[in-house]
Length: 492
Image (cartoon, rainbow, N blue to C red; front, side, top):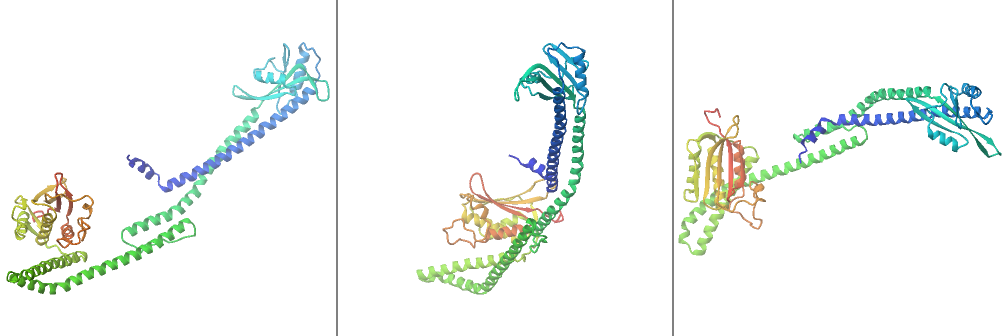
């Protein structure tokens, strides 16, 4: 699953933007919640005040009015209804009366379209009256139903069948409610704008230590281990800066100790190698003389002489390789480049090591010239072919070619050394160029110094090239050396 687009979206919204959005979201939720609660309470208070006033006033007017029963309608009833309507509070009413089939009102229409059937049924069931808020054609109304009753006792009444209804517009209350809503909205928007100021200040106070931490980490990554962050305050960010400084100090001490130990190890290897060269030269001279006379000695003495001679030769190779690797570690190795015929240089390397028999095969096109250090290139080829013969299986094939990866890229000199052995185990591949690495942990000694491939890697790097190890599909190990192809004609 690809996560690239998602990371890009998160990258587009930086920490500052996310902090501001979170701050604005909290401010918006707080302002919206406060405005909503205030609006609800104020709306409820306004409507309940008007509602309670109207219900109480209407009940009092109904209780103070006497009607003669049975009723037959007429102007007398309408006059009574108009008198009740004129006394309406807090706003004028339109009063309706219903008694059997008789319908009358204080207005023009004897029947109201605002009174709902539910209110009529509730009024007949409840002798104490009912009220209901209704919206008709976008206009809010308060409708009150008050039945006329006969008292038959202190706590008992009997419905008379006459029900009076009062219908009152709530237009003024609705205007006040709308004004409250607009005031809450208009007050919230400037509040959000003002909230940006503390949001910016908070974001800056949070982001400044983060930016300092990023710059300090980048500085340490470039090698300046003495980088520290100024500690301000005593909050969590200050604790983070303090922890970073403590970790940086410990890392600086550890790296310094490692560098000192590495420098001591390099000096030790270099000093030991130099000290061993003179006695080894004498020992090699002695072993050469003994080798010449070994055939005239008895068998046990001859075997011991040859063993001493072989071990002295291995020790000499190890000392030379240690001195070479110490020069690389001390950055003292130099590249003395010259334009050479690469194929001829490889043939010369093979000839000097007596690898001209069937054990080594070559594929060396003529005419390839490059600027190389002949001695170091000789070491590269000799170490790779020797390693293939020692750990692989003959025949070993040395191939040479040039290649250009891109039209604008440099030409590469590519040398491949392959064998027909079992190949390199996958677990060993990442370590083949490590110093003194043994593929077989049970093998206490190696045929070489254990530094051949490490020296090969350093020589290739000195030429500005790369080397990699791998296995061929058909079996066998293959080492590929790629060096930029520079010639005199190309200005190399």
